[in-house]
Length: 212
Image 1 (spheres, rainbow, N blue to C red):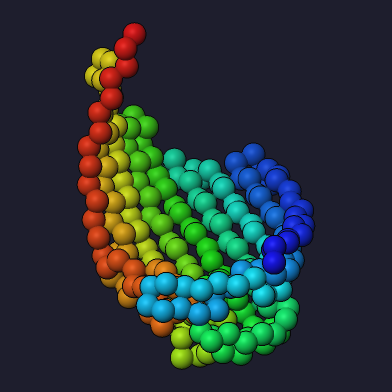
Image 2: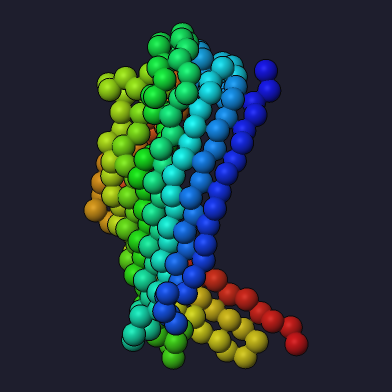
């Protein structure tokens, strides 16, 4: 059975000050015969288009240039994703009307504060990433639920130019607080949750040459 969706969205973009831009979008998606996981054997999943769903929410972002070469950016999404019919599957059991769609996050946000020193080609930023809780099964079995988490990342880079050459050195630290969290949800599967990376580091150097 083919899946069919109706998408509705309205949005606006505006400069609320000369240095601050706001984007806002309100959306709604109605889907009939959405494909869901109905069974699995090890790493092999079985799918069927039996679900009717509704996703609605709001997205908002703020991008603001601050004094002293600072910049602030914030993006937030609220998503209400639920089933509009009831059905039974071998993998998940009973899914009722109003259940949250597994693997979806009601609240997510990304926040960044950056700073640059143009004279030296230097820039740095701190990032804050938030994911709300989510279900592993469409039945919303509370045993298979991933808790909300927040990650903090740091990054910095510096650039130089020598003649036709351009050089860049960069460093990045992800999961600064070394949090344990679920990075991937395998919906309606016995091995439901996959862990995210522990604190990790990246450093690198790049070079480019421009022919003139």
